[in-house]
Length: 377
Ligand SMILES: Cc1cc2nc3c(=O)[nH]c(=O)nc-3n(C[C@H](O)[C@H](O)[C@H](O)COP(=O)(O)OP(=O)(O)OC[C@H]3O[C@@H](n4cnc5c(N)ncnc54)[C@H](O)[C@@H]3O)c2cc1C
Image 1 (cartoon, rainbow, N blue to C red):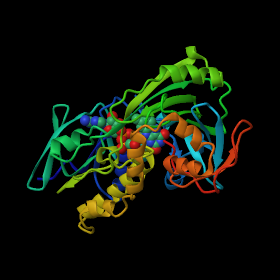
Image 2: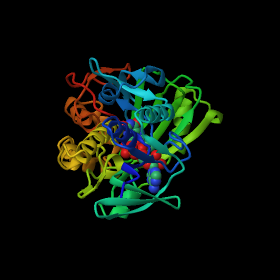
Image 3: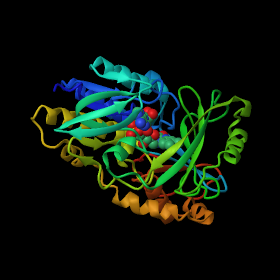
């Protein structure tokens, strides 16, 4: 029997689109299923790219904005400015980037089906039958790139994410007085227990949000009011609301089986400390697409081996996640912004390498030595 596709990918997010394009460029017939009516709708991400992601994927400059510095506020709202030579983040028009990734995938030959919710899959004689909207598609390989609560994982009996950060965000079309030169990050266990709150100017809007550790409910109201006052944002101008879960338990134990693999959030491939998942989704998604293509063409080993070889080591970040989940008291954060050893520890919590600092007028003494930043989200 000739399969309908070589590869069916569930999920049109960063991981699925990167995988789809890579596999199609290597000659596979790829069908991508996305449950939403269009790519980039109902966003659940802030969409900040770390430099490594920007470099790896050639993100168009008209869809993004470079931000070179981080302004880190303590519970008293005293702040310290951090940067690192040559480093930057991109705030993005995230919806447009997902649409652009979709166009790139289609140009490579991918068939993208929107409004197409994956409903289940069975494998027989090396061939998958995948159910979607009352229809069935056959495929040699199945890739689950369907996010934190992967239906693919459930359908094929792979592991499921168990621990999550929970985030919520508001967009404002007018950035008011919010300084676009910084990602503004707030360390405050009352506002964002177990994580941080943030504000940033993107190409389209100002974004204000926060996330909290597992089992807590993110409460945006009070922080949004504070940010509106602090940065001159108009409450009447608050529009779209982004919210979602970020897996933070590390890579799942069983993320592959014969003929199927999970990638991106579906596989827990997210920094457990910072919750940064766009870079791993793009990088590992692309690698998965390449490796599946090689495997299907019988020139490569089991594709999960190729992906496993490129998984980051998140052990230290996992341990620090445990510390953050314990919700350090605010006096500790205040101290972290005022003494060199604690500042160094804080940097290691929020940036996997520390950064150069420039304290503001109200800040305490200078902090530790220059290094580069890791993803703040
Ligand atoms: C509030 C918040 C803010 C964040 N901010 C950042 C940030 O600034 N920087 C960063 O690096 N990371 C951030 N993250 C994490 C980041 O968004 C994710 O790690 C990243 O989006 C993962 O990409 P993905 O493609 O694996 O999954 P997703 O982006 O979740 O994409 C999965 C896709 O699968 C589709 N889907 C789901 N089920 C089905 C189904 N049954 N059938 C068909 N399609 C289906 C979904 O509609 C979705 O389009 C944030 C997360 C949250 C929740």
